[in-house]
Length: 209
Image (cartoon, rainbow, N blue to C red; front, side):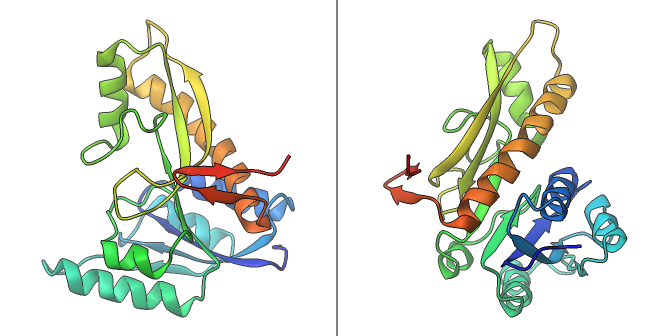
């Protein structure tokens, strides 16, 4: 089903709609890569079910104690053993520690449900983002695909896609619009990165003309 190519490892915590977008794009030949595994911090979730349905290795790694460091050491060992060329945080609801990120420099990408650098950083996740966007009176929101660095939501921006914020929007309706945009942006960003058609200059990801 999947093309031979770069090795993709996906981290996810929820329903896995972004993960499904990757599955579909790889199957359609839009991404030159192989999904090696889906790793989740939950015992069960939609993303794990999507992996099993598509015969992708599904790894459940829930946190069973209060030792944050030992949990991420275990997660690192699992991911490292998969020899990823790229790691995709597709709705993974944990912040990776600095040392973890630094072991995979510019090899981890994430999507964020706003147009960074607006509405990003500690505490800005999920519906909290959409609530703050609506409260602010902003007329445009969107999503961002970016490289992960130790500073939260501060890595070089790969791609962004805007969506209108209507007067009638609620956090739920805005979330649905942003999710649709995320699917497009994530697939495009992943394709570009795996093809190596970019360079990084400071906080900017530049593409050849």
